[in-house]
Image 1 (tube, helix red, strand yellow):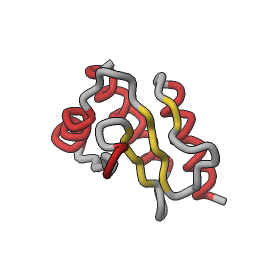
Image 2: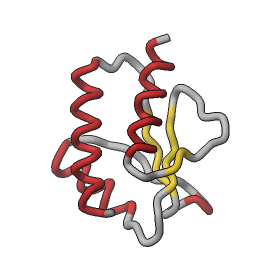
Image 3: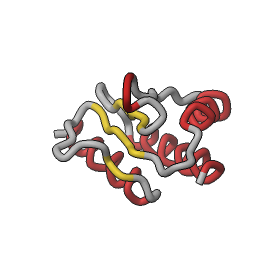
Image 4: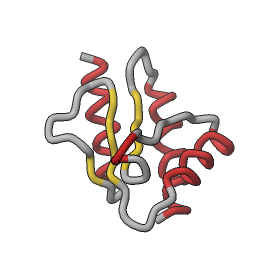
Length: 96
């Protein structure tokens, strides 16, 4: 139940920031986000890592440079989700 709640919260965060969720039926373990063009996913991921100590992943193969992936398995507290949400929005604001 908690994992589903976290997944919904992350998907809402992605959509509230103008990105599209990648998957018609997304699972509760990972959320893919489609970015607008032009958008430098590498720079965004590096900013999250350097400024906020948050690691999320790009995508392999033909999706490389088009989506990034946010993992949300395991136990995450509301405080951790709040920190992620705030950091995500700050880092994203620089790119869009």
